[in-house]
Image 1 (cartoon, rainbow, N blue to C red):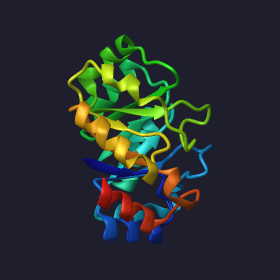
Image 2 (tube, rainbow, N blue to C red):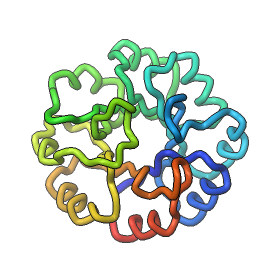
Image 3 (cartoon, rainbow, N blue to C red):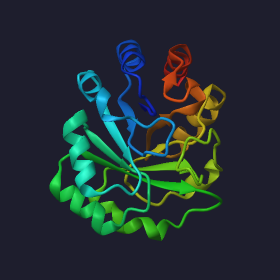
Image 4 (cartoon, rainbow, N blue to C red):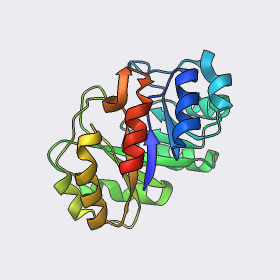
Length: 206
């Protein structure tokens, strides 16, 4: 199961996390309203880290995304807003990074609305719906995912913590398309600063 640690910001904390835990992906949030927003000053130090970096964007322009890909050495882009199918297709044409398309889950999912994205993304990511685009520390009803109709792999996000490990394993055993998990706020000492001991325990037990 792949592990994405999202909401990293401090270069030293990120370096310790990468060297000690070796996640599959490290998420960097480029949404200015997020308390985990990453500014360009940290780009050289973060770009140098030996981990695949995922840029998280909310309705950003194509120009901004392409700029951050180069500046931070991104290997993947996570689209967390209302990005259109045409926008995703254009992004696919102009870059060779992985593309994660997020669908925020409240009480149900409209599977049909996801179909047009299939051709131009690599993963779906399911997060808990919030007005702030993530970081709520809350889970959604994972039973919804038992009806997942596509072959496209997906990541599970939204309030994941140590207390969810058994449930995550149970869900993974039922849905072969579940490729991994995305953790964030439940593993923080403060926004953008991760508790590495907690992440290590999660990595070991998952």
